[in-house]
Length: 396
Image (tube, rainbow, N blue to C red):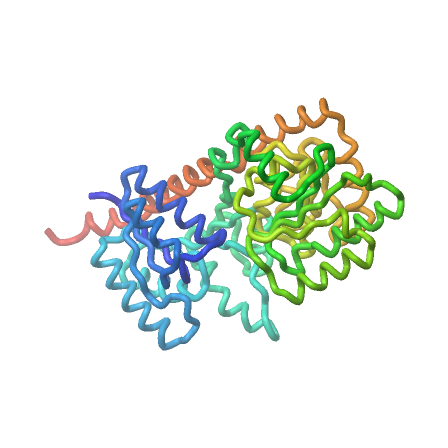
């Protein structure tokens, strides 16, 4: 009989958690396992169904104690009906239901810490967060997250498995981008033919560091270090809050950077955007649990500049595949930008090769999938071993 893994999450929208769920579900199907996903639904359900994954819609995006209890009963039924071998929870609200259902049904329970959760008022949220450390094991998406789990929740390192999030190297592949796509993007965005391009990809959110980058560019402009052909592209996946966008536009104008900085909404060809860029920047003011931009930029052979906090130091090789700057420090970011923009064509070529190789060896989606499936198998093997004495002593 095939092993069946049930993944639970609030909804199948667009984001890192949803992407990881889909990637692992696809890997399970490809390996001959059965994959079941329970969520509140969303646009990602169609992709799951296309892959041959069973999706069960439940109101798992609620924090209501009554609904969590009802979800527990529903998930217990799913475990029975689908003959689930292992339950994998990826978010706190559904994890409470999944944990209780798995405990009732006697199946292994695994969790993934996708981020660093806040404590809330007087640390009360920490009690709510604790369900995520009840997995055996707990998967951390970076060593930064693993260290947080040990420090904040007292989990022993032996109960944590670090599996870094992975980049789809068949999609983020410099060789896949045709010159025509690059030319079209440059035309659409009205970029100069000979200009140096710096890109900060990411949604328009204050903690993503757009203001910090603008201030660093203003510092460079004061030193006459920005030629007329220079451009900084702030590429957002979709339109962000109007008030924040307006504040960024004001900051750009106030620093005389109108001709240098462009805010671009809803880029439909992010791979070509990476290729058109000379430098990729991650400027997050809060530590990121993984930092997908840092990995994707390197996969595309681009020098990456990132803050020296969160998981970025795990992903980037300083002075080899990019530069780390002091978090929140305008001068430090400005200096890193100057170093990256001063690279010779030969230096860029060497860096591109090293950066791509670094991601291939450490942060590929295939590596993430292989390690996750191997973990599932190990958990099931140990569960079988634990049951063996009981089966041996049971009456004939």
